[in-house]
Length: 187
Image (cartoon, rainbow, N blue to C red):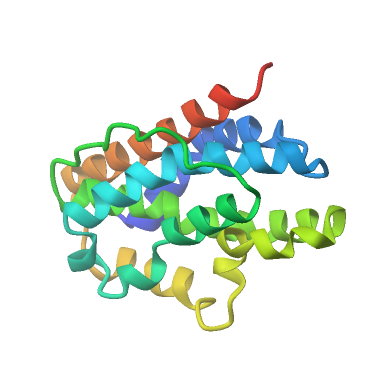
């Protein structure tokens, strides 16, 4: 039996590091760069969430509507006077295991968002009206979301085939975020 949580953590370590490096190039102490950061996030997150919703994330996580952050991201962009990025193609997940892998990426990203929120607020206290997306995981009503997601990952025995499918979903999600970040920041 494979422990899916540990498998995804190990197998996506390099993808996670590359994606973090791509987003670390945004200087969140500058308001303009914070806006670009949100646009890059929206470029990946909005089509991912739409795909997950349309392809059954609500079956994998009953509280999926409470976990989704797209509307918060749209509100933050509007608060900064920015338009939503052009719609991107939604990924197609072949099965529930691939959905679970993509959800692993989105749920895990909320942990890093807490750190980024502190950095943004320290640099621009006036940006507090445009931080709902980053604050989502810090909300006391939602702080149990990551542990409950991990419990979901650990709840069912996982075969090598299912783990490979979950990895494919996670890889697709990380790739979308990586492309989005590189599209906004010049090396």
